[in-house]
Image (cartoon, rainbow over all chains, first blue to last red; front, top):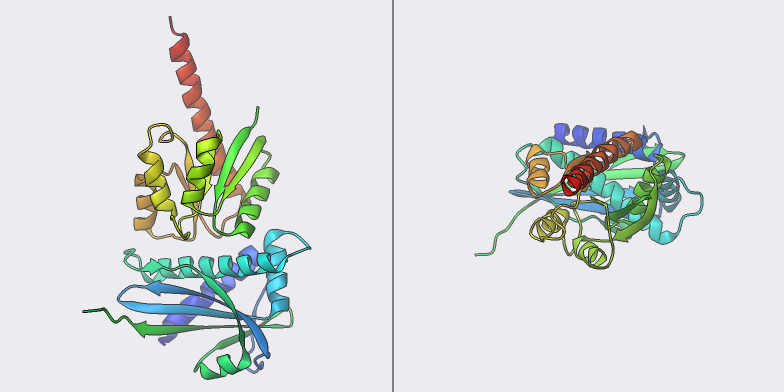
Amino acid sequence: MPEKMMRQLKNVIFEILEDMFFIFPEEENEIVFPPKLIEGNIAISGEKRIILRFFITKVLARIMAANFMGEKKISDQEIIEVIKEFANMVGGNYVSLIDLEGRMQLGLPQVKETNKKELDKLTKVERCQIEGEFFGFCMEKKEVILDA
Amino acid sequence: MGFNVLIVDDSGAMRKVIKKTIKISGFDVDNFYEAGNGKEALEVLKDNWVDVVLTDINMPEMDGITFLKCLKGNETLQGLPVIVISTEKRDKRVKNAISSGARGYVKKPFRPEEIKNILTEVIGEEYARKDDETIKECDF
């Protein structure tokens, strides 16, 4: 993955985490993957298909949801919705940077549970620490195969 | 008398945040209606009087642009002021929303003042338009 693209993505993520979730990530490449995580992802489709994937511990996801909504009591459903919104905001802001012409299409965000085993399969996951919790992200680029 | 506001976003959490932002901005709102997509919003509009709509673009079932086009094509609803709140910052997308009938555009992430300013602008415009109509009606 070109370094420039990852740098742009990192800037977008950090800005959104700071502005909308009031949390400040610190890059921490030595941090190990926690056994269980929540994954938020969003696809950007064009000539190539890019998938942005975010890995967040449940504790951090709860902090993000509480900060975003300005409430102390947060339901599991609200956590899912907030992580989807986070993926949506990162996706929308990132696509605005890489596709000024407006040719690429932003997909709908998704949230699922994942684990260390899944993350180990990925070649490069950027790792950060936020409020003592793990936060990771990566970008996957896939060729678009059109049906004949 | 306060306003009736319809918030259209597939994220319940985001609807809550927008609602809170409008409340703390000091607007006199009588009713908040909510919808998870354009289709649900059209249902809400069938049965309820709404003064202003705030809608997302990227939603399942019926996205914000299709929703705007439906409103534009409906004789009763085409004058309803709609503000788009979206993560999409690209000029083409913003122009598309405006040409589809949006009166204003706020980019996510937003600051509460941005919602306040755009609502003041759009609701103010709406008031001015209603006042003009009242003057015309009363103009013997």
